[in-house]
Amino acid sequence: MQRTSFSQFKCPAARALDSVGDWWSILILRDAFQGLSRFDDFQKSLGVAPNILTRRLKHLTDEGLFERRLYHQRPARYEYVLTDKGRDFFPVLMTLFSWGSRHIPEEDLAFLLGDAAGKERETMLVDARTGEEVTPENTSLLAGPAADNEVHARIARMRAWYLGIDA
Image 1 (spheres, helix red, strand yellow):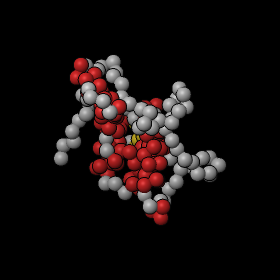
Image 2 (cartoon, rainbow, N blue to C red):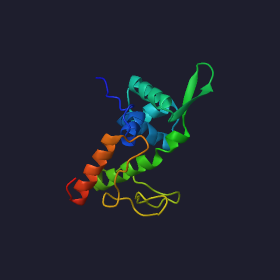
Image 3 (cartoon, helix red, strand yellow):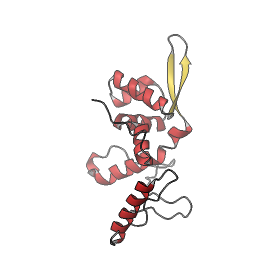
């Protein structure tokens, strides 16, 4: 089944989804943040079929989240190292992890987030400029540089709905 491409969408969320790919890709990134970088290690950790892993690693490399580096000449073996773009996915992964931790029964949680000292972490999304927690109640979409008249009208309708007024 062919996956729909969001590469031409002007929405950052849609483009991010296109860049990351699918759930296997997110789990590969999760493992990379825990230090895995080699094909065999990813396969052992995830239990994913080799052909699927190959496609996902190629996609993540093509999208610039991984850099492929030769670590053994004969036979040629590569490791997958997170790029700056890949490392920038960390807050997304932690937010997803935290959301899952809140909504999965406690008896099913095999992993928790912790700091270097082994103390459990509790995450929240904050505005980098103000330190204010980002919530649905204090956050809305704004028109970006590529916004056309249709996007401006859509945002106006959403703001009017949110504020309870007629647009």
